[in-house]
Image (cartoon, rainbow, N blue to C red):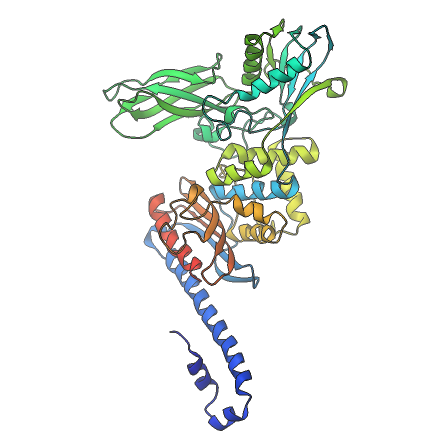
Length: 508
C-alpha cells in the first residue's frame, strides 16, 4: 500500500471547517514530512521483509546468518537479523587491517628494508658482512607491482647502491634478517589444506615475490599421465617437491600444493587440463628470508661484486641477535604506500597483504611485527575510538582463520567510524564496486545494485559475506554487514539469493 497526501489529510480530520481555519500551508508542510517519513518506513520495511524472506529459504534452513544495515545520515538501524551474531566471515575481515592501517600509519607510509654493513670499507673492500634487515615490506618483487620478468628489478637498485658506496668486494657474508617480525609462519586457525597454496603464504619480516613459488607444468594429450614439471620460479635449490599432479579432461586448475612454513618439502596433488604446453600453479614459499639471501648473493656475484662468504638467513643459520646500533646503514629501500597496498588488498583480496598490514601496525607501534602484536594494536585502537569489541574475535588479518568471530553489527561500527574519519575518501576507493571492479565485478551486474555497492566480499567453504557501503537510490549512504555460514547450496547460488537483498537495499 502506497500512502498519499490526500489519504493522510482525510485520516487526520473529518471536519472540513476545522481544516479551513488552520494555516493550510503550514499543515501541508507538516503532512509532507509525515508522508516522507511514512514512505521511508515503508521502504525500510521492504528491506526487513527481504532479509526475513531470505532467512526462510529452504537452502538456508541450517545456516547461520548475521545481517545489519545502518543509515549513516540519520544514525538509525534500518534493518537487522541476528546482527550481533559473531561468525567466521572469510575475507571481509580484511576491512580491519586496511582501514586501521590507513588511520594509524597513514596513506603515504612506506615500509622500509634497511641494508647495513658491520665492518669498514677500505679501497673498495667491505671487511665484514652485508646485512639486509627486513622491515615488513610485502611488496618486494611483488607481481602486483611488477610485470612478469621484472620481479627482480629491485636488486638492480640495490646493486647500484652497493656500487655507489664504492664496494667491489665483500669479505664476509650476505645476511638476511627478518627476525623483528618473528617466525610464527602463519596465524592460528589456518588449515593444513591452505598452508601450501599461494593464498596460504605466511607473512614474514622479509617477504619477496609475494612469498610464492610459481610451478610451471606441461601435460600430455592423455588423461592420467603425470604432469611434467618444467620450471619453478624463483629457483629454490633446497626445495624437495613430490609431484602427484596428473592430466585430466576436466578444465581449469584442480591441483593443490601441500606443505608447511619453513619446511622445504612440498607435494602436489590433483589435476590440470590435458594438452597444456605451460600451466602455472602457485604455492607458498617455505622460507622467503633465505630465498632473498640466495638471490642477492647470486645477483651481486653475476654483476662483478666479489664475495668471499656465503648467503645466510637469520633463522636458517641460527645467527645470534644482531645489534644494529653498532652497524652502519648503507642504504634504505622503500616499499609501496599503505594506500597502494590497501587498494590491492581489498580489490584483489590478497591474504598476504592483509597479514602484512596487520604486522606493520604492530611493528610501527611496538617494534614487534608479529600477528599477536598487530592484533593487540588493533584492539587498542578500537578501544580508543570506542568501537565495540563485545563478542568480537579477530585472529588474523585476512579472514583465512576459521577462529574469527565477527558480527554484521561489528562491521557497521567500523564502517561508521571510517565514514566520519579523515581517511574515508581513500578507504572508499580501496573497495570493489558492484558490477564494476575488483572481486565485485560480477555482483549485481545489470541490476539496481550495480555501481551503488562499495564493499569487501568474503568466500570460503560454507562461508559467504559482504560488508561495506551502499549509495542508495534516494541518496542515502548505508553501512551494512551480511554474513552467511553453513548454507546448503552452491556459493554461486547463494550469491544470487544475497543479491536480492542487496538490490532492495540499493533501491531505498
